[in-house]
Image (tube, rainbow over all chains, first blue to last red):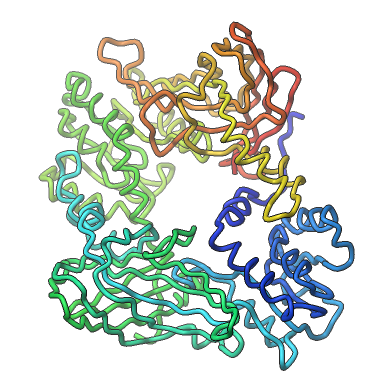
Length: 316
Length: 316
């Protein structure tokens, strides 16, 4: 007992947080339970299954077999949970990287995964989902969510802006003005108040998960925000939507915009310094370039041009 | 511009969060501004200076010279900030590990540092402070904070307990009972409600920062909690206090207990499973063994015995 050696173990709290994000988890549940015809007798592959909740939704929605893969220790709990809920051989669980595990089938009918990160692409597992799709999905197969979109909108929330910018003018009696530009360039993941939103929302990227390549996840897009209220834009707010059965009758949309119930993804805030004065009816034009940081592919470098202002933001 | 290579940079947001913890930052400020006789004409060493706020407090409190050391990129901002506030050569800043930098003096009169982690010792910088003290502090010198204590108390907060334990009985219609013990063994950093506290607070470890050795930071202690209300103890709540000028007239105490204004340290919650029934006036006895995880010295392994219940908790 004197020698305290413990091998690495998972942080189980993170799975609790994910499950408790009801908007997130219930979107998957609603789609599967409301579309049993899609899942009945199908072979389903769950990429990064965690506790196995999506696999159990799929099994209960009628899947013939669910293959669930996760590389973390949580897979042993998922095995226990699947057994405790009577799924027997219906759900088969595998520990390892998708690229390494040996699955008992060559092709699957459906891939499900909750791979989305902040601003959709930050630390996202999409690359693995794309690899898995290309390796395992049969030609008529489907990936869910099947379409994801990234949107931008404008806020005039002045408190938010003062909190991160003006703050540095007097910190316990000292000037720390040099911190402003450094803090501004770190895109901030936080809840953007719905009543601060002063423009419509503009989709800057739509990704068809059934077809996309990894290379197109680096993207550039022009955008126009139609301003609803004369004010000053203090920040651009980013969010994403994930569609299940996009454009179909029973489509379910998992939304993370500032006008929606909040999720653990919150929103992504790109502060403008200085704020940009706008008038009701203005079309505020801009451009976004979003790329993986080649030195750390899980992080993002985002160049945002709004009006005359151009700035590079980091998510790391 | 096509090649997006960016070298590692600091997360500046963390410094914003630390500065905005007013209880934390103002404790240092109050002690230094109210004890200028302690600092006047002294050579002060700031270990892990960040933005340099503590160094500026010390300089304004009358220090002759402040040496400020940090190994992260933030040191360049600290240099800029110090200059912008007119400290010139009074504050001298050095980038690097304390063990590596070459300081212009052999001994200093005072060491200041904000090294405290969750539950005081989790991911704490105290080892570096102790090394620095042994290498640089002159015999009559002082380290601030000079004394720190870790305390435990009992809560009967049933919502907190249900949130982490009962929750697993029915997760979207599935049983995940096996998750209970895993989640319970992860000591949880969260705000414990003041009105849930049903015992006095018992100090289980006091550390004299002027004298302590690194080895005594692994500790074992018996404790007794005097119960104020007949109920069931759902968790033991850990917190710490940091003293500046301990026992002196102008002592300042930075407190992080559940009955105090909250800080970014919140409290550390050790869930009991099952809860332990107690009666008003009971003396609930226990023992705590707190050790660094030898496989990861920044993480902690805490064995807690309360009544007949013994459990090992992890902070990682």
